[in-house]
Length: 627
Image (cartoon, rainbow, N blue to C red; front, top):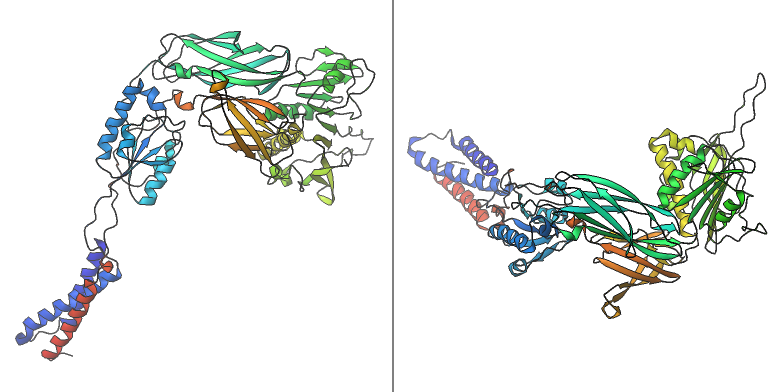
């Protein structure tokens, strides 16, 4: 409208300037006609220049997006109730549009027949793709959802005039086992800590019980307190693992009176039980570095870690409980470890239990030489250790994960010597000047990985906090992650977590040296005839020990790859877990989004009309004697 207003104003202004002084009474009628022709011609030319519309704008038809996630079938009651609510809301929305898409774990274009037979099954509720599609089409978005989406903030980017339709929810008593935290591997005979998260739905729930089984045998139970609407609680339990190396299935089953949804009450995890401790940390000179690094070791690997400290000659203690232990036992456990970290006297070597010789380590090891204590100053002297500052992370198998860390801002280290015989992981400079010297080097001898670490003061990074703490965690997490690949596990690829949910990608960890691993994945059935197998090719990026493939349907999968087998457990999707609605019904309060009206410049007649008006005005001016 503003374009036409400006064009009309220009036409009137130009006509007034051209003919306002032509006041001869005998030519007044002709002059008025000429002024009108001049004004119309200028108005058309201005409208063409300003791309004025040639017709009124019409509201765009919205893009209808249907949330096809499985949470419909939980939040709305049984399947028939959910589908009836979905189709009722959709039929009202579809009458306003000619395009419908499904969103959830992906975006699909569908027709009316597809919606009429739709059963929501998606394992996610992501609406970002629908928002982007509507913006690309220049149309408002009409989202039909149950109110539970993974990215509600995406709707703030929806085009003007977008709206959300949420049917009335039926409040039902529902309580779910939302999460299960267990390590993916453990040592046989250990006591396994299990942490579970229980979530209630829209109705308060009474107290209940969470029962665990190991391969079908009872393994313990824990009481679950009463919960309010959408409340969450955590419960912990210790489960004793049997002897023998095998893969065991830990299953938790939630039992609460009045719970109407059984599909979210069970979670299963696969735990690799080995006959040796996955990680052993031995320190003959314990210090603050040991305490801080152990925190990262346990967090980075999520593996059981045993630490042993020598606090005096021939006096050993177990880290944590400080229970006494014989050195021969420490050596025996270190010899059986998949990962061994020796801090202090790096010549210390694990021996056989009978003490007749050293065992050959097949796993990974780290040899860490701390800096000697600073000598005491004499009278009139200042005793100060040489300060080495990290210079950077040269090209190495670990450099991809260490690039971009704030090396310049880290506290100094005290070097114990110059490690040799490997690829430099990080190097240091004395006082930030001079030649760079290795502080950590890595070796990979046919899959047997070794790290040589020099110096003390790494804990100073952690204690400073902020970016220094992040650098400390990144360095040691990367170091231990690299060691974990060579801890004696020769499988080409294995799942990196004990369980996942349907809708989550499958994360793999590399055990061999090949960048592409092949795994045969077989879903367990009631019998061998019902089992279904397929082959997966897993590509690992250069320098990376992890890769991701697409999600899988719920079930237990046996995986065979070069070097051994493993188990993948896929539980029901997160859509079955109750959560408070995070989208409310809206009606497009920001105004109607309109489509682009046809432009005047798209038609031919305005150009011809402007030309004829200017030519007619020129002829008319000559007839009345005007130049």
